[in-house]
Image (cartoon, rainbow, N blue to C red; front, side, top):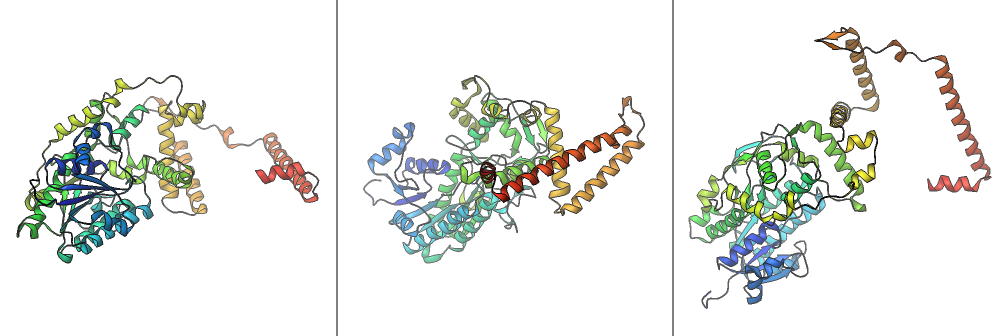
Length: 495
C-alpha cells in the first residue's frame, strides 16, 4: 500500500460461503486491510487457505480475525473500531425456519451494525440482502425489478427478517455521514458452497434426485459466487465515488444475478450430470408434496430439541423449488457499474471441478442395507416409504394429498370432515354402481353384495370380543383400586 496509512474494512460473517470469496477478492485487489469477523473464537483455515492468499495475509497482518457475535453491540463496536467500510454479510442458516434466531441476527444484529457505523463515523455500509425479501412463496417473479414492494406475508421467517434488516439499512443512509446500500444476490453457487451441491449429491446418492417438483419449467436466476463478491466491491466503489455517482447509488437495493436465466431443474441437472449422476425425470406436482412437507416440518419442530437434523423437505423449500424467480439487474448496472465477470457456463464448470471428490465414480460402494432399510425392515410400510413399489408409493402420496386438501387445509371440524368423507364415499359408490361391466375393453370389478353384509356369526364374535376386553379392563381397574397388584400398578405408571 506504498507507505500510505492503512485503510481497514470489516466483513461480518467473514467465514461464510460468499464472504470468503469477498475477503479473498479484497486482499487480491489490495483495496483494504481486511478484518474478518465471525462467531468462532478463533479462525481455522482449510489446508488450501493456509498456503493461499488468506493465510499469507493473516501472517503479514493485512488481514486479521475478530470473534464477534452481532447480537452483542459491544462486540460489534470492537470489531468495527477504526474501519472505513463494513460489508455486512453475516446471516443465520436460511434452511432453519426459526423466527427467534433469524430476528436476533437479521434484525437486531443488523441494527447493532448500523448503530456501530453511526457511532464510529464509518463512511460506508454494504448489506447482503436477498431476493426473497420480495417473494411471497405464492406468485412467481419474472424479470422482477426493485420496484416490487415487500409482500404482506413472506415465504419464511428468514425472508421476512432479511426484509426488516434491509429496510433498516436503507433508512440509515445519510446518518452521521454514513452511506449505505443493499445487495440482493440470487441463488449463489460456486466452489466452497456447503449447502446446494452437497445436499444435491446426498439426495442423488439416496435415490431422491430423480424427482422434479412441479412442472419443471420454472425459470431461475443463479449467481456465481465471484460475481457476488464483485457486486459488493462495485457497490462500495460507487458509494466511495464523488457525487452524483455516490448519491445515486446510496440508499438503494440492487438485484444481482449472472444475467443468464435458466430453468431451475435444468441447472440442477447440469450439476448432477457434471458429477456423474442421472438428471431428475419424474415430475411430482407441488400440491402433492406440500402436505408431506408440512408433516415433516411438524415432526422436526417436535424432535429438533432431541437432535433431529434440519430436514431438506420443508414447505418453504417446496415453494422455492416450484416457482419462477428471475430478476432484472439493470439498476445495478446503471448505478453500480455491475456486470458479471464469470459466465454461467464457466461458473458451472469451476463448481463441478471443485467437487470432484463428490463424483459418482468416487463414491465408496455401500456394503449391505442402508440404515433406513435396517430400521424399516420389510413389509408393506417399508415398501411404500422406501419406494420399492413405486405404484403403491405414488398412490399413498395422492391419497395423503387428497386428505390434506379436503379435510385439513380447509379447516373443517371433525364432524364436517366425516360428513364430507361419507358424502364422497356415497358419490363414489353410486357412480361405481352405474358403470358398465366393461369400458374400452377393461373390466370394471363390481363390489359384491357380501361386502355390505355382516353375518350374525361375525357380529356375535365382534360383540363377544368387545365385551371380553371390557371385562378384562374393568377387572384390572378393580385390582388397582384395591391395591392388590403392585406389579400391574408399576406397569401402568411406566406406560
